[in-house]
Image 1 (cartoon, rainbow, N blue to C red):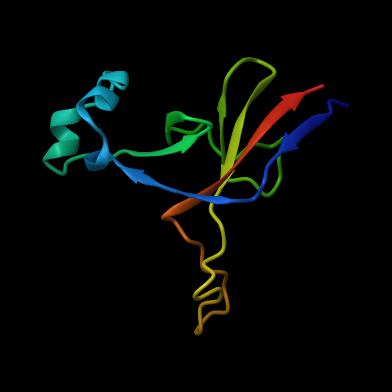
Image 2 (image 1 turned 90 degrees about the vertical axis):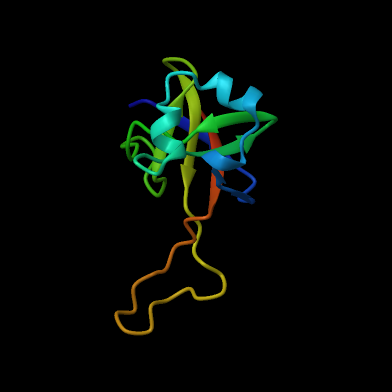
Amino acid sequence: MTDVKITTNNVPRDVISAWELTAGERAEFDYLDWPAIDDGRDSAEFFRYRGQLYYMASKGAPSFAPGWDAYLTDSYFSGIVYRFPVDQDNPRNYRSGDVNYDYERVVIGSYCVR
């Protein structure tokens, strides 16, 4: 069985909307359809982690990391995982009792396969 080590400090970071990026930051993501994003036909969200800006284009929920919502790879053996934290102001939906997540923030972790 493969051992995956995830390291996180559990500190939520703000999700960054496309309109908040500078022209230089937009240039890093030249594969995105910026005209469509600018006029509202598309959207893009980002986060900063260790000084790097990441596009939230995920490979989906990682089977190797239960409890995390998505992952981005750096290599075949490493990358980052992220999840949306529980909304601290309103943790439960008062009607259904379901957990309310804060989709304006993410908790980041780095993973490594050993």
